Image 1 (cartoon, each protein chain N blue to C red):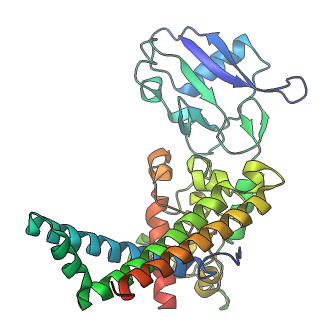
Image 2 (cartoon, rainbow over the protein chains, first blue to last red; image 1 turned 180 degrees about the horizontal axis):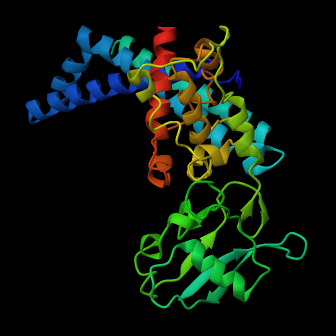
Length: 123
Length: 238
């Protein structure tokens, strides 16, 4: 058994499940928003602001932003453990991978928190 | 026809190179292995593995015009369009991702190490009956499409996940064998087997691109087997 302390759930099954469930959430969200945009025809600031400001969309957006964060982390963690390894880039592989993962984790966290502030902070 | 073959002898060559040969096939749709034998008559320094020459032993897995396959059961007409007609060269390289010992011969140690990890043998602690451990025809059917694997390594060496992490990701061949015993009604080690597969690499590094399915010379489907294992893991954990 291979272990990895940097993966999201430290377990392949949970990471896989998180990625799949978040993908479904994102797909449904995309369809709903696209459907609204098409149904709306001409989109004004007021209409968009009203749509995004209603409680249902605030909750949906919260799910969405968490789903994007989790999905991105699992995906990018996979990318870094594929390509940024000692096998691929030599002795510095582990350090480069850890730095890349740290940057990605911080960015993801910032985006998620920033998104939550935008959604719930009020305008 | 023109044949281009990957050559590398670590004792004399600084780096690998492609060597061109001209072979007279008489316009026949020979198997790639037959063409290799004709090249060998011209140049006996060229190395490759072969044994049964009928797709059973799995020795002559190689990369044929960009696609892994067994030289002995791949006719020139199936190697790539235009090869049989002589419009295009037959290009032979060793299986990708494994260290080259010489020319078309690769070191399969990493592949076998992963095979060993899945404990590819029946585990049953009940006393053995006087005759065989019997299975119902339905249970026996469950291991069809799994037991036929000949370990030629065409699938695992066509898998990018195996190229990048050959020490951590088990690869399609080993996972197919893992499911072969998970699906066997006589095997009792299901829980132990599954317990070794739920980390982020061993099984879950499979991204489902199905290169393994497209190259398997025996027409097997490791991606489906991996999917079944994932379902078993999910059922066990949820």
